[in-house]
Image (cartoon, rainbow, N blue to C red; front, side, top):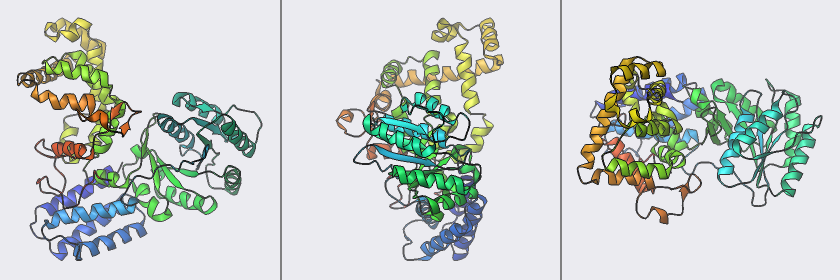
Length: 507
């Protein structure tokens, strides 16, 4: 998401970074470029006008910090403007869960927007927070809609309301509420019917259900790929329903992101979640500051750490760290790393969370580094015997031909993988010769995300499987990624520093 906007803004800031002092003309030209970039990203014109007016005032006002290079100041002003446009600084907008369960969450939206799938994803997210969830389908029109929700409930590990043929949507809502109260559910999610277009019958039914259920949350599910149509849909629903928030689906397929940038400003409603994949766990809490950081090419190290804490198997990671400390690194371990990468969103997902990767995007593309490459490497290792994975030195030409045929690749790709493994194994051996010091941090990151004392923290992620690193630790990790490792922030002239008070990792 936002790829086109990120590319355009990065080029603007790159041009500014070469100038020591910016004139008013330079600022005007830069803001004009930002304006064009936002319009090309399909951001609503009134929103763009307001953004540019505020940015120009900030760029020429008393708030300008004289000790900071002007180019960095423009980055800071753009960042602040994006955060405000997306919903403002502070904690991400969570769900308003009632103190007296069951909490009722009503899902609304047009047909095909992803309502039913989002209901299943939301149920899984709440179940991970140890909530007892009941899913109820009120969609009596779309064929197999109720069966689809029941299947999603099974995938999410939650209950679904039994289907009673011929029952009207308002009656199903009453039955769902009664079942939730009698059986002690914490949350009941009502998946309402949609239409291909806005019409009075759909709106009337949704309004009646809202009156019956009195939901704590009424979430509008909108397809990000429809751009400004999604914004118009949100406005129309908000006029008839007491909406409390928005969920943008297919955000991973929206390279422009104009709907997300316009939605909050036009409707006044917070974006609460982003649908980022078709998988049942592909739902992210929306955070304005972190999304603004991604747009400016700063990545999202917080999301990366959270993803790691949820997906990494701590016991396996600790065992791997111990073996690496001894300089051991076979192809089984390499295969496990590839699997972990896929669980965390694949190569493209991880790259999107790393700061400064936008700057080397072209080189990554030219090197053909992508998820297909990872899949091919996994297939090559999977075509080997257990002995070959443990002792790759025995791989003669005949064995390589057999492996290549089994994986459906050329022998050259097998050789390339073996060379990559050899380089990694040599690096780990060199690190182990230093007394294992290089692995102390690795063991902490893989095994405990913070090392000694981590168990004393109250805040945990991933169902308590791994301690949440402190803000200081997150910033230290971010500093390493942005420092000598080669990742630099756009518009900062490679200096690695940020304007005072500019911290995209701080909520």
